[in-house]
Amino acid sequence: MRHLKGRAKLGRTGSHKRCMIANMLKSLIINERIETTIVKGKEIKRHADKMITIAKKDTISARRLAKAKLMIRYNPLTSKERRQVKQNDFSSYNDDRKVITKLFGNLKNRFDQRNGGYTRLIRTETRVGDGAKKCLVEYLN
Image (cartoon, rainbow, N blue to C red):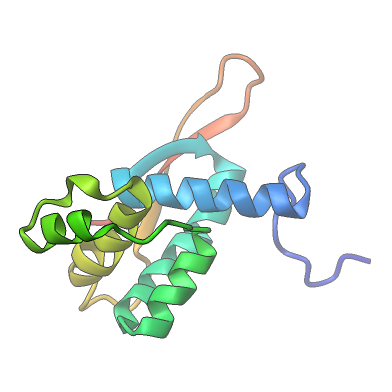
């Protein structure tokens, strides 16, 4: 019996599902809006709200937890790149560093006074190929 198993399987293995959710969360944080199917959107919404809650704590352990959930792995900066960053030149940052910077900076400050419900689903048309119902997942303003 599947009692209290309320999460979508999405037709994937566990590791594939975790990687897909992490990639979609990164895209959502960077672009603040993604288009996907409704089933995936509901699953992403759940995780995206938790990421904002983690970011609002803004501790070292919260940053480590966010990096683990987003599956972020990046090499340390070289001394030359560190000097550039100190001079506010973030061109040496890869996308993963930008995700963490935006999550713990802009998004954390935007939702500082809000207690939950950071994202919304907007249902759109059905997909032409297979008839899947699509939606937009976006962060609120």
